[in-house]
Image 1 (cartoon, rainbow, N blue to C red):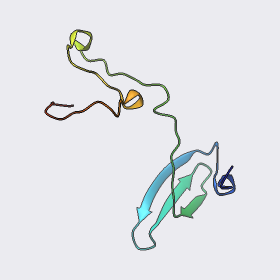
Image 2 (cartoon, rainbow, N blue to C red):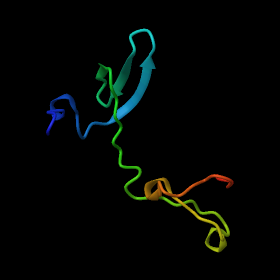
Image 3 (cartoon, rainbow, N blue to C red):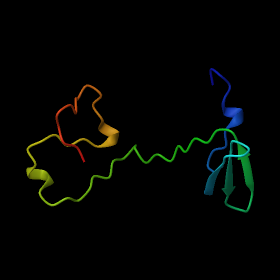
Image 4 (cartoon, rainbow, N blue to C red):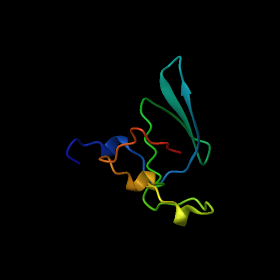
Amino acid sequence: DKYDLRRYMRFNTTVEGARWDEESRNWLVSLAGGQTLRTQFLSLATGYLCQPKKPDIPGIDDFAGTVLHAQEWDHEYSLKGKKAA
């Protein structure tokens, strides 16, 4: 609201596809219902990080190391000298 960006946004919209057009340097976005938009910016706020889905990995509960999900990322945690997957 501070920068009046909502007027450029579309909420509660089903995106069926999006592809980058290098020539026009725009996104071509296909919406449900057959409409296609051409836009310079595309922000997918799908909420996939709001409720983490942790992988079902056998033995993960017994793992002695640190397990971090992207949603719970600790920016102070250093990966230096560690193996990460």
